[in-house]
Structure formats: structure tokens, C-alpha cells
Amino acid sequence: MSEHQSFLSSLKIRRGEVISLVGAGGKTSLMYRLAEEGRAIDWRVLVTTSTRILTPRPEQYDLLDLSGGILADKDSLPPGIYVTGVPDSDPAKMRGVAMELLYYHLNRFDLVLIEADGSAGKPLKGWQATEPVVPHFTSSTVGVLDIQTIGRTIDDSLVHRPGLFSLLTGGSEGDMVSLGHLLRVITQSEGLFKDSVGAEKLFINKVESRADQQQTDLLTTQIENVQVTAGSVQQGTIYGS
Image (cartoon, rainbow, N blue to C red; front, side, top):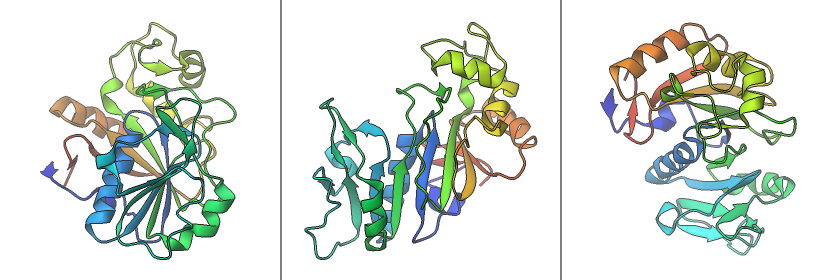
């Protein structure tokens, strides 16, 4: 793996795209990594959610707008990271803007990043019928999966809604997560790419050791019709580069 590899280029994300991020195990970290890379090449990057997310820290953005108006009071926007939404009942969180309004403002930005799924901070999840919430104008749906969950126990500390996860994967609470479980998360119609819009792109996160690389290789050989990229957001590395 090489240091400081571009995640934008590895995921084949181009200027003008609308990216919806789904799954668990690094969605938010990947979203802000992509935003930082966009800003570094003088893009105007909009970050928001179609659900609820933690309100970002000041160092993660150039401007935060929780009015719901998507910076409508700004005649022009310099390159930077713009986070927009509305306050949530939980003061630590924010909700997304109206998606119809966002659609109207898309041409003001070079890249739009939408966190379209929730996992309660856990690295795996099972999906309810109403999730994820992927806007119809999405150009690529990026699913995030944590490879280091293999070998860990399926329980409430690891999985958001372990019962639904078990139904999806054929596992049971108390089992160890296997490669087969993760493959079903990716490939089943009610899994990671449920309700996806546009191109489907998988990012396998936390590939940080030789064992992680071996598991990633085994998983990747069994996936079809999905663009796969692997690496570590925290380490800033892309596997295979």
C-alpha cells in the first residue's frame, strides 16, 4: 500500500458527481476524507446527510450552515468544504436538508457527498425497510465495509440491529463474523446496496495488515458487477496501489 493515495481517484469519483455513502465501518471518515481531497484540488464540496449525523468538528469544514437553506444567502462560493443541514433534537447531531432543495442547488458545487445511512457508530448493521435513504439524483452509491469485523462476535456491541443482520447473513447472535457473512452483506438484495442509485462502488475499509489483505483478496474474487476499492481511511492508504 502507498501513503497518501487519492481516494477520489481510486474510487473513480469525478467532478460534478453526487455520492451517497451507505453501510458501516467508516462512512463518515471516508466522506470527510473525500471532502478534504476535493478541497485540495480547489473544488467546492458540499457535505450533508439524508438521515442524521453528528455535527462535524470545526476543523472538518470551512463553513457550517444549519439554516436548511443550503447557503442560499451566498452569491458565490470559493473552494472549500461546506456542511449543510438543520438542527436535530439531539444537540450533538444534525439532520439533512430537504432533498428537493438540494437538487435545485447541485450546480453550485463541484462535489456533493451525502451520508445516506446510519449505523449508530457500529461497524456492521442490518437494514430496516426504510433504509438507506439514497436520493434519486445520486450518481454513485459507495458502500463501506469493515474487513476487521471478521472473527468478531455478532452481538449488540458490533452490529446495529443484530437480529436483522443475522436474517440477512444466515448467522446467529454469538457466532463469529465470517467471510461468507460479509459476502452476503454485499450481494444480498436487502444488504449493503439495497435501494442504491447510480453506479455501485464498494470500499473495503481497515485493510491494515497482511491478514486483512488476504481476507480482502478472498472476498474480492467472489464479487461481481461492483467496483471494489480497498484500503484504510485512517492510515490514508489504498491497498494494491
